[in-house]
Image 1 (tube, helix red, strand yellow):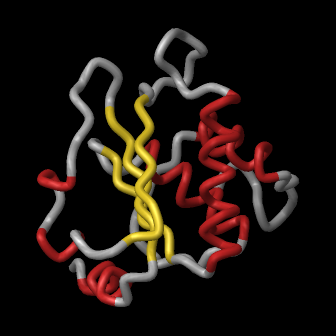
Image 2 (cartoon, rainbow, N blue to C red; image 1 turned 90 degrees about the vertical axis):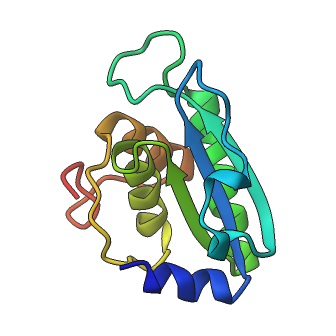
Amino acid sequence: DASPMRDIIARNNYALITIDDVGQKQRTLKGFPEWMKGNRGFVHSFTFHDSEESSEGCFSAISAASVAADIISCKSLGLDLVVSCIAGLSRSGAIVQAAIDYGFEDTGRIRTPNNRIKGMVREALGIEINASTSMFN
């Protein structure tokens, strides 16, 4: 059910982060449903693999710092954050979980965060791992 997302989009008070696979052409808004094509504060696209290993094309400390800056900007501007990944669970789930730990509201959508990416973004945000932000949630 996309209705919670439609509510966010209808407010036109959101930013969009997209994640694409390395070697793939980056998506344009043509790849999104019509109801997502509203006014956004910004669109930031990232390209990296969903790999747990540190190899070329994988998520880096520089990527984590850039994603963290987007999360901080969205929070300070009062924007909702929409994260879209070509696969849709691990990379986007990691960024969403880090954003929730930073103070964004959880929409309750199912996600299976990539723990490496999630940990790197949490570290870039200055989030400490404790009982409420373990590596398992």
